Amino acid sequence: MPRVLIIDRGLPGALEGRSLLGDGLEAHLTGDPEAALERAAADVFDLLVLCGMPAEEQAELAAAFHVHRRWRLVPVLYVSDPQAPGLTIPATFRPEVDGIVRGSRASAAVERRIRELAREGVAGAEAVVAGPFELDPVRLRLHSPGGDIDLTEREAEVLSLLLARPNRTVPAADIIERGWGLDVDERSLQILRRHISNIRRKLAETGQRRAVRTVRGTGYRFEVRAG
Image (tube, rainbow, N blue to C red):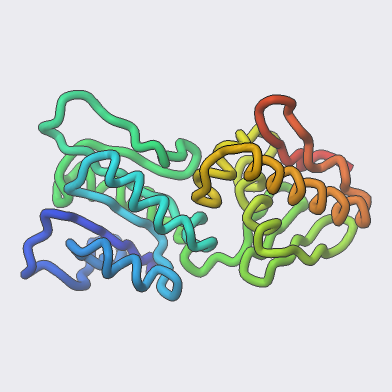
């Protein structure tokens, strides 16, 4: 059964806890983001829902969860205040993974979007798959056509972000800021370049060196069709 963590700053204390959300979904409701973050390293859900807070706070909270590697596989549903003018997109919003909707936590539109995003479930997932490549971010191993590759934690973090968007350029800033929670400066760019170099060296040992491409001045792309 897919598990959904709903953090709602305006949640009445009487609603704190666990409930069923229809369609076989288990919802965990809390108004205390700090307590949820304390359990994030050990307790991973299939969907994170952020309500009752401005976009800036939603982005900060999502980034805090993403410090934990497996949480980066979890989609985030950003619930925007229906009374607020316009629609503010949080800085951490990933259009290929996440969702955004206007409404209150208990509105039909929000519940429908929750069911859509939580249907598949990723809390138990241990792999990021793109073409013939499969990354195990828990055991730090990449399965490739040429054989398995052992990775460091940082290398696995980089590959997790690249494999999540195969054949598409991932900006270096996204890897550094959203993936690592660091400021983009010359030092962090050098660290990233070093990890990319090490990944290529390991891929070369299995005949897959060209899988990771540099897009000059922008970032990197994992080419799943590379041989």
